[in-house]
Image 1 (cartoon, rainbow, N blue to C red):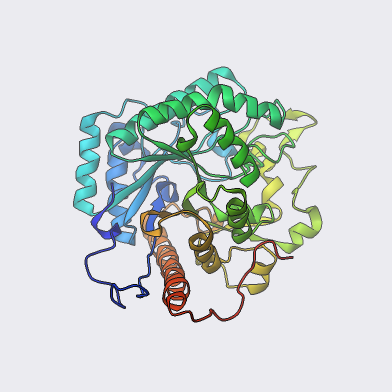
Image 2 (image 1 turned 45 degrees about the horizontal axis):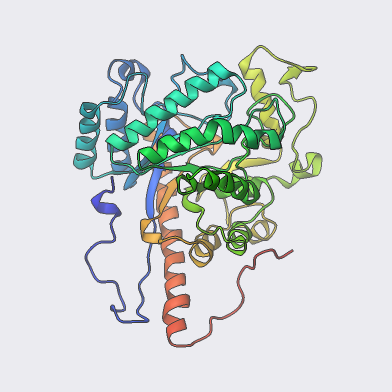
Length: 429
């Protein structure tokens, strides 16, 4: 449900309304509630689950977030992956151990009205292709509850992963996607929902040596999955919630990713954005390369996973030995890193999205996601200013990109005045 603050407003933009006028179109800002997992202490949430949503909406208003992406996850007592084994946070801000009823939805909507904070989408990020049948059944059942909650909250999209069955090859996972994931998309279609896939490859999700544990990790796989969806009449249900941090993790830059989609006729696939960066450590690359630490990680003894979940977390050294997540605005501007695809060039990211993708910026959500380890403090008073600063940075960068696009592609183009210079170019090495 969009909030008043997320609309474009009624004041005419500078430059008038005639053809060739200056009309920048900023995106709509949001924040994933996993940024502060335990905003509401668990002993209070257990007795009154929706209190967590109410308090997060109030917190969002305090830090300047006009919308939230409401995070859902299996309750810690139900999850097949212990919290100690996770690299990045999950949050069951939306607690669905009990069905989400119209009364619960009314309570949440009342809180949205009183805080002025809207809802961009619901998010449940889990392995929908889990190898174990019983674990996968639990995950799918929760996803269907998320779908139902989205409908009651008048939300048009749910974000999540596809995942991977690590016991079979990638081509076999495409077959499994057709068998077990297509039915989820049919349920989404029946409810008028879009499923937005985040493309993290999830290299440390398990203690195998597999790097790609989410098969929807790049444009090539997105296109393959979408073609399967089209064969089953659910092509419109599959879209991408693009996160540039994962492109950096795989040595890609956003402009080239977007250009590839346009060249392939799939520029429509990316519909929304997670705002999260990645900073590559050149020393780690020198030691291990982009495959990450492949041996002596401490997550297993031989081929046997270690029993302690905290030790299993060492599987994430496949990623963490050479990179660290960035909360937008916390990393120094580094032109050389941008050119080497070792940090997100935020301004060009937002500009390229407007130039190359099929989207309406004013209807597109830009969702802040906080996974910078050193700033993952779980104290509202300490974290609030950090998130407020990052939100302000993301907003300013997007507004700058919107101004550049309007000036270059509308104002100057209408007057047949050439744009200066070349800018960043796709596929350039």
